[in-house]
Amino acid sequence: MSALEPPDTHYLSAAIGWLELGNPAEAKTELARMTQPSRRNPDVLEVEWAIHAGQNDWSAGLLAAQTLMQVDPKRASGWLHHAYALRRVAGGGSGVGGICRRAVGGQCAWNGVPASGRVIRAAIGLGVRGGG
Image (cartoon, rainbow, N blue to C red):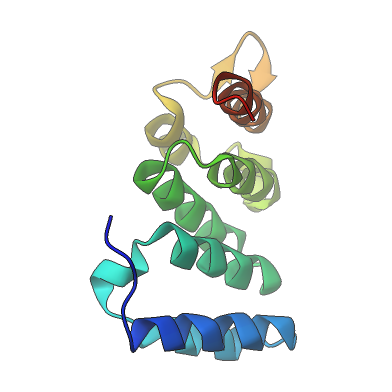
C-alpha cells in the first residue's frame, strides 16, 4: 500500500482537526475531497469510521470497519470497530447477516456467540498471534 501524498495528506489532517473540534460533518467533507485510492488507506478508514461513529451512523461505520478489515486484516482496530458498530446498527447486528458473513468468513453465529463477540475474539486472537 502506498503512502498518502499531498493534497490527500492535507485533507486527512483537516478531517482529524474537525473531529478533534467535535465537528464530524466538516471532517466528512474533508475526506470527500480525497482521491478514491487514498480513501482505502487504513489510516483514512480509521478516520472515516470515527466520523460515522461521531454521527451515530452505525451502518456506514460498519461498512468502513469492514473495508478496513479487508485492506489491513492484521490491524486489530478494524475488528474492534466492526464489533462496536455491529452492536449498534438497527437490530443490534441481527439484520446484517450478509455483512457479517463477508467480513468474518461465512457464519454469523459461532458456538452460540453473537457475531460481535466472535469478532472481538478474532481481534484478540490477532493480538496474541501477532505478539502484541
